[in-house]
Length: 134
Image 1 (tube, rainbow, N blue to C red):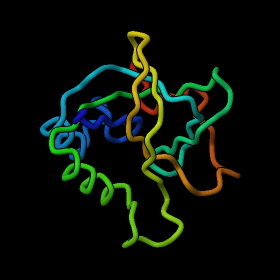
Image 2 (tube, rainbow, N blue to C red; image 1 turned 180 degrees about the vertical axis):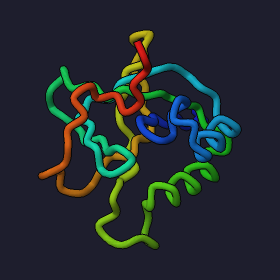
Image 3 (tube, rainbow, N blue to C red; image 1 turned 60 degrees about the horizontal axis):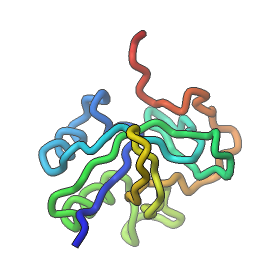
Image 4 (cartoon, helix red, strand yellow; image 1 turned 90 degrees about the vertical axis):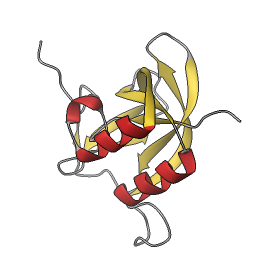
């Protein structure tokens, strides 16, 4: 069985210093920086990625290999409020998507894709929720 991987692009990234990232770091192995073909929007204090048909649209993030993927995905579903116990439509959908690793390889990874209308939301032009100082 192949280990499940997850692409994170917001508050779960290393530089976000969130409690949930600490959980991810404890139960997953960092694979590589990566991009997802999509656009990134500011939802609130967190972002939402939506798929794009334009190959120039690349959301910046990280890929992790999850240990005990079923257990971890249930916890992340709670964090992202994804599942039947949350109001419909869920704010995010967890979908298997293709992402490009920094080393040029592509992998299939779980991605939480924003599932509400984007009208009126601020586009994050850099497609990078965590800006590193230059």
